[in-house]
Image 1 (tube, helix red, strand yellow):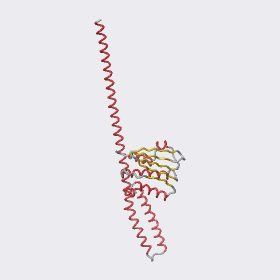
Image 2 (cartoon, rainbow, N blue to C red):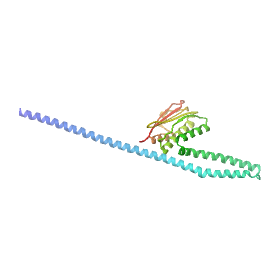
Image 3 (cartoon, rainbow, N blue to C red):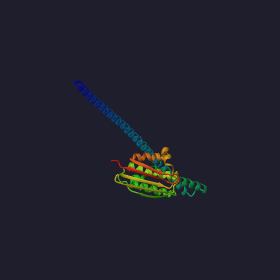
Length: 262
């Protein structure tokens, strides 16, 4: 009887020991797995942070290069073209020149004036001065007016002032809209655009729609062009999400929702 009791106690202790060992192993693997997951998350976060920094640096380099080219156009080219234009006008006043010389000078003046206008327009597109002086709303409205004046596109728009957005991020939004319009004209062959931008308590929403040729969204995501890649990059910097809706021959719609960073 005594031996039987000892055996039962031994079994109980053995079971308890096994339970403790099993529990310990389960807890060990659980916490080890948690640490592994945590490390992987830290690596992923670090990778995303590095990608974001690379992305931001790339965009910054683009903007600096645009600014440099715009300044070169204004300082080096436009100023010299103005001198050529003024000199030509002075020569045209001279009554001693013959008809052939006058015609040549008039052609020079015409070419110079056209080139000067083109360089000013390019410089303006590269670095719109109104954006820095009067903000995003005014810059976009000017962009729409110029687009309507120089093309056959009709633009319906309703743009709210994004009062919280920084100057840098306002430039990102401007570039996004600029790129969308360029894509609609060059690739979509659109004739009508609808552009709405509204601010809410946490951020803003940009809705862009055209009646162009449209495209297959899946193909665009798998093989995005440079324009779409730039749009996605800027949306990411703005802490936003991009939704694209499009089918061939049915136009395109882009919805961008951005949340202000705390």
